[in-house]
Figure 1 (cartoon, rainbow, N blue to C red):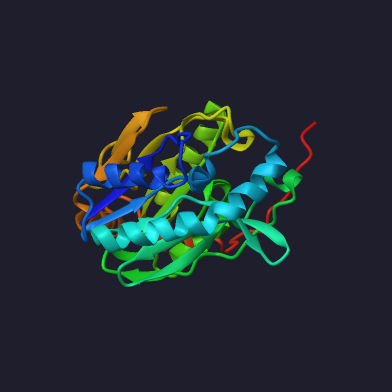
Figure 2 (tube, rainbow, N blue to C red):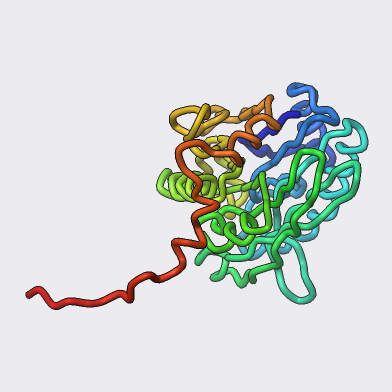
Length: 289
């Protein structure tokens, strides 16, 4: 079984359905099939709205993206039906009552589930977006998995809840417009992998999209992380895609990598975590000045 994280670069299209043809071509390129689990980036769903008149404010793109979101999800469902692959589609603006959340569709031949960003960034909060609901833990043929979106990965307790419930694979679609932002998400993904002894797949959006103010500049590199322990790579990177360019990070031996991450060798952070939460001695403050 394979786990694939996409470094995806959206494009502007002359017709509404052309974005789906790009996805079909990408899935052919990686020979996506029933043994393939692939994750696309945060805000990649906006590409379904990238036709017609360009430009507009970030607020107008929230509405435009929300209008196209269901069409994007229907496209993901078609791709799953055509290939048999399991896909975490790119996230995008979605209406939830009178509010807007950052949502993605997990779609598999066996069924589907929703992922919503729990912690909007300061930028998203300024636009009026709200936090959504956590993705459920899914028992799949790839393993026990779930997902968080970008900024969520920087909050240890969010991923910790999944780790405590036995999640083995955590998917992290992301969108960052600076190298610092990309580094923050990378650090978060690495830390969550080490703490939870699980596989973490980071899938960023890249490239310039001047027609859309929300994702006008995007930087990142798809990578798949594991705890750097035992027989794992010394840097804890199981697979990597190109930096700041379209491509894929492809992990072919997913089952073996999950087993190694869970087993551990020199460390067992997941098992020792409860011990770290028990205060053996009360913290004290001493004045040394």
